[in-house]
Image 1 (tube, rainbow over the protein chains, first blue to last red):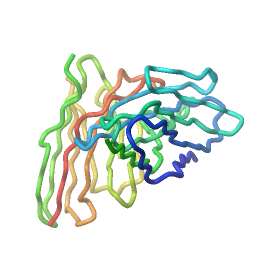
Image 2: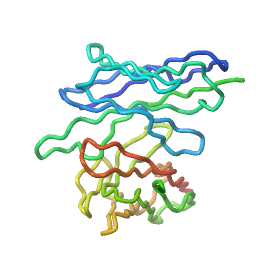
Image 3: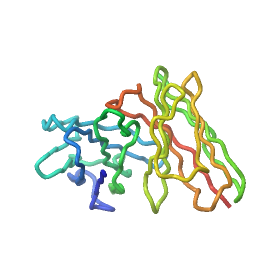
Length: 120
Length: 113
C-alpha cells in the first residue's frame, strides 16, 4: 500500500520569506513517481513537478526547488522569496510504476495537503 | 492547447437523486481518471478509463460508476445520492501510459441536500 504524509497542515509566512513544504512517502515498490500539485482557490490542481524514483537529482525552476531523498523517503518542496500568489493548497502525490496485470493505472495517492498562506 | 474541461462546474441535488458529471480531456489524451475531494478524506481515486475500458478502480461503492466514449470524453454517474457524496469531483487526463503525468480539470462542486 502507498502512503503520503504531509506533516504541515498549514503554514503562514510573510512575503519574501522562504518556505519549505515537507512530504514523506511509503511504498514497497522499487520504481515509482512522485508529484507536486498546487490547488489555488479556483479548485483546479495545477501540476508542478514529477520525479522518477531512479532520478535523485534535485531540481530548480525559478523560485521553486525540490529536494528528493530516497534514503529518507522524502520529497520536499521549497519556495524561495514567497509571493502572495503562491497562496494555495499544495499536494504531494505518489504513483507506483506499472507491473504486469498492474493496478497502478491512473491512481495517484495524495497527501492531505498543506495550506500555504503568504501575507503581504 | 485547451485544458481539461468539466461540466457542470456546480451542481445541487437532493438525497436519493442521481447525477452525471462530464469530463473532456486534453486533445490527444486517451486516459481519464476521476477523483473525489472532501475535507475529511482528502483526494481519493475513483476510477480510470483508457480507450473506453476501465483499467483501475478505487474503493467506492457501486453507486459510483463511469464510462468513456470513443472520443475519450468521460462521464461519471452517482446514483442514490447521499449527503456524504457532497464533494469536489476532479477529472484528470493523460496520454495513457502508466508513467504519464495527469493534468486536472477545474472540478465539479456537488452539493447534496
